Amino acid sequence: MPRPMHFEIPAENPERAMKFYEGAFGWKFQRWDGPLDYWMIMTGDDSEPGINGGLMPRRDPAQPCVNTVSVADIDATLSTVGGLGGLVVVPKMPVPGVGWLAYCKDTEGHIFGVMQADETAR
Image (cartoon, rainbow, N blue to C red; front, side, top):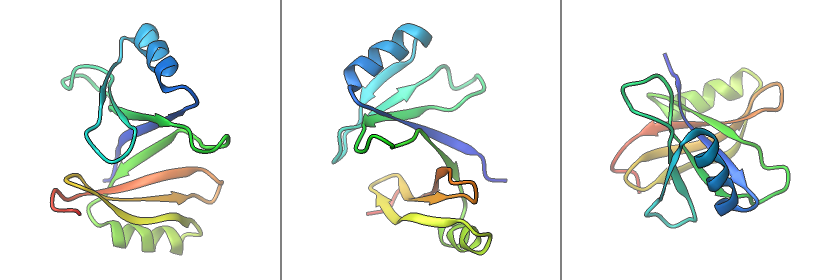
């Protein structure tokens, strides 16, 4: 069964947001070695329940926090989402060395991500 595997927090001021979350929860941040300004968030020990996430500069004032769900077949999932009345709002794209990612909107207007792991994605 697909489960949430990552969350994203858009921030007007990433440094301020990182300071807040580090102080409030002890989260650790590490700059991602990729083409975008992005920081990986480590929320705790992997032996405990929970997921890790990412933080990025906010691109739009209405940009929401997003949960991403791990799926086995992103193409089949996108087809299912559309068949159930959802929308694909950002088409499938590679995250190099990680997998395939797309963003969707559910029937209630919430944005969510779906990701298929694939280290060969380019």
